[in-house]
Length: 248
Image (cartoon, rainbow, N blue to C red):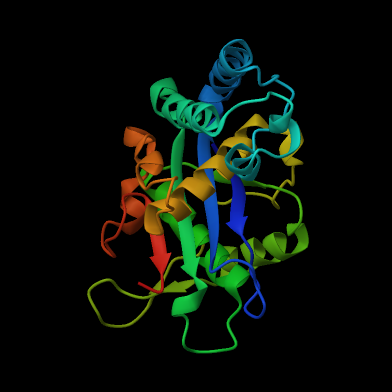
């Protein structure tokens, strides 16, 4: 079974929102590799302590690394040093060989048909990709999201476990793709208490900047994930590797 850890970047608001996007990012770990993933992550967090003075118990959040906030501010790092720590975390996921990652980005400014439920759209695409991933791997999945949307996510998974139609990539009628391989209700976690949700948080912002590069935070950060990216999630739709962008 795969554990699917989720976190997000941006917000779901459509009016007076400070962000133009909402990004949902997933880090997948198989249960056989879970302990290895934990041990390697602990070792990596000790590396961040020794190299960047970021304590292992400090929460590693993209917003804090980029804008020098929260626990990261205590480390007294320059912006280039904070980006170096960020990049190290992305490379770590590739080198560890126990993580798989993908993201779903909703570009709110491109939505022309209103009202639109941004959260529902993002999670619908995410669950569809989880179902396809699990089917291709012949295995089940369990969703572990950051706290905050627990009841919504549980209801969404319960619904899509029974009823889920997806458009055919080659035209024609929609296809039934019920997410029967996603087992149990989702299990919320506080990001401060989960190294893996913290990695998902970093990935979510990096995915956003892959699609919408910043002046000093470029699109290449997402590419540091390399072979850990799940390329099948958008192999037919196209776009940045491992990122589902809607609307295209």
